[in-house]
Amino acid sequence: MHSSIPEIVINYMCLLFSLCVHEASHAAMADRCGDPTGRLLGRVSLNPMRHADPIGTVILPLFAMITGFRFFIGWAKPVPFNPRNLRNRRRDPVLIALAGPASNLLVALFAAVVLRVVAQFAGAMVDSPVLPLLLVIFITLIGINIMLMVFNCLPIPPLDGYHLLDYFLPPSAREFVDRFGPYSMLFLMLIVFNTRILQIPMEFLNKGILYLAFAGTPLYSAFMGH
Image (cartoon, rainbow, N blue to C red; front, top):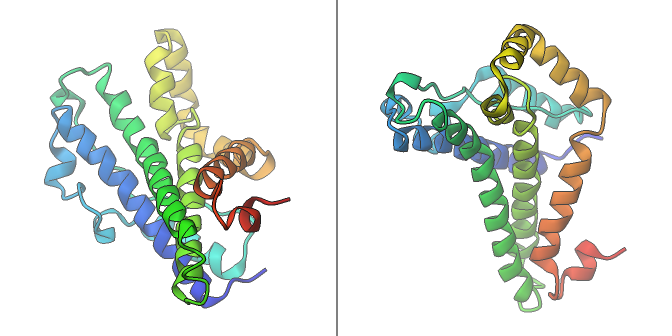
C-alpha cells in the first residue's frame, strides 16, 4: 500500500531526526569518555548533513516509504572513535554503543509525554487541524525510535548490542564472533526478513508507551481500544 506525500514527508523527517539523535548521542558519549574524535568531526549535532549515508539514510528509506515495500531499514554513518583515547578501554565502548539506543528510548518517552499533554486538551482542540498533525508526528516518532532501539540492540556486529555482548564474552568466544563478522550483515538480513524477532518486542514496547501516553485521557479509546 502506497503512502501519501504528507505521510512520506512526516515519516522521513521523523526518521531523519531520530537517526541524528542516535548518532549524536554516540559522539557525545565518546567525548565524555575521553575521545573527542566524533565531536571534532562535527558529529555532536542534529544537522542531518553530518550523519547522512546516501544509501542507508536516503535511498533505502525513501524507496520503502514511496513503494510501500514490506521491509523497512535505515541507518546513518557510524560515529568513529579512537579506543586509545578512552579512559576505560574495556567499559567505555559499551557506554558509547548503548548511548544510541538509550537516546531513541528517551525520544520515544518524550514523544509520549507530549502526546499525553495533547490528549488532555483534545476536547478543546477537536476542531483544530493541528490536533491530528501533532498526533501523527509524535506517534510516528514513538514507532520509529522503538524500531531503531530494538534493531540496534541485536547482539550482532556491527550493531550496538554486539558491544554489550562483547563485554561479557571470553576471549575464545570473541575470536569466534570476529571470524563470523564478515557474514554478520547477511545473517542480520535473514533474521530481519524471515522472523518476527524484531516485531514482537517492537509491538510490545510501542503499545506500552502509547498506553502511557493515552491512559486516562479522552483519546484512550480511539488509540488503545479493542
